[in-house]
Amino acid sequence: MSKYVILGGAKLSGEVEISGAKNSAVALIVAALLVKDVCVIENVPAVSDTYVLMDIINQLGGSAEFIDKGVLRIDARLVDKFEAPYEMVSKIRASSYLMGALLGRFGHARVAMPGGCDFGVRPIDLHLKGFMALGAQYSVEYGLVDIRAEKLTGAGIYMDKVSVGATINVMMAAVMAEGQTVIENAAKEPHIVDVANFLNSMGANIKGAGTDIIKIKGVEALHGGTYPVIPDQIEAGTFMVAAAATRGDVLIKNVIPKHLDSISAKLLEMGVEITEYDDSVRVKCDGPLKKANFTTMPYPGFPTDLQPQMLTLLLSTEGTSIVTENVWDNRFKYVEELRRMGANITVDGRCAVVEGGGKLTGSPVSSTDLRAGAALVIAGLMADGVTEVYNLKYIDRGYESFEQKLRSLGAQITRRKDGEKSKDAGIA
Ligand code: UD1
Image (cartoon, rainbow, N blue to C red; front, top):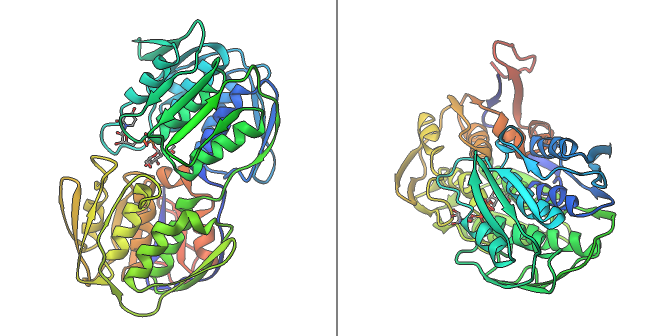
């Protein structure tokens, strides 16, 4: 088992390059199954979620391989299976996209209930309702969701709740349906727009992605092409928070500043200096920070995937802050780990009351999910002494070269197998 060993106290400074968006890449890789041709996807992060999906494409009869750094070639011409059993999909939430992609390609998908991070209940009712509106039937048998359609026909679909996954999944199936589909109350996250742009560049006809009404005119077939993934909003936000948490000065490069508006606004409110450039953002902070309340919301609101990192930063402010989690019903599990480090946080349902100003001290802690893992690393950078972060499999799912990037900014962080001694000076 690997762990991070972090000696807190270093201020982060310098420049860091943000990778392609993990949540977008995982959708594009699956969307490539709709294309009976070769797709080359650029700026793909080398994270374990990517490798899991590459493996799934290979098992379905296609081929997926990196042909250069960040350049993924997917040949879905020979894909001939529409079944993705539990062993294939249980590790990763984005495997739910296999339903929409295989349904669109074959009119039939048999996919095990998807896995992924545990934030409480993660239903797929909206995905299934969308498929049914397009003319599909489904049943759940032997652990597999079996969805089939004689013919997919465009339809009007109102999403009862804003869902990233359901919007992407229905969009993928609707691309191959006959006629027009209109998704209302669609999610507007940057990666929804990225999936639509990817599919359009392969011959689809999708309009309105990024607004809450998406219109899709079905097409007969898609063709291959080359497409770059957008920069990772959440990785960028994580480094912005880490820079502020260590009272550092970091230029975060390869970002789309517009995607970071909700994060920049909150950091500014706390007293952090933010300077935006065309495709980078500088975060500088040297004084005390003010408390701030925030509520997670679908885009363009504050992203739930930055809630643990931002909550951790609030521990270093003066005063009491309130964090409200509006997207997931159980996303404060990591708070228990922060308490080991001396954090004073009270959780009541979807609200956390964060007492700032106390001292964090290094301790062994364990990631409870991907973003919680990043938050614990930030806590380790803020703390006095040495923090060990266990359960790195979560962080590996979504952060490319996390410790290397942090080290390049001056963080004292090293990855070690259990029992292995560090060669780094300063780390016990
Ligand atoms: C995606 C992200 C995840 C992020 C989340 C919210 C990926 C791979 N994952 O997850 O990191 O935290 O968006 O920004 O992109 N819901 C239903 N029924 C459904 C589907 C969802 O009730 O059929 C509910 C969920 O329980 C949740 C809310 O809708 O409360 C949002 O979920 P959704 O946007 O679908 O999240 P994911 O796509 O799973």
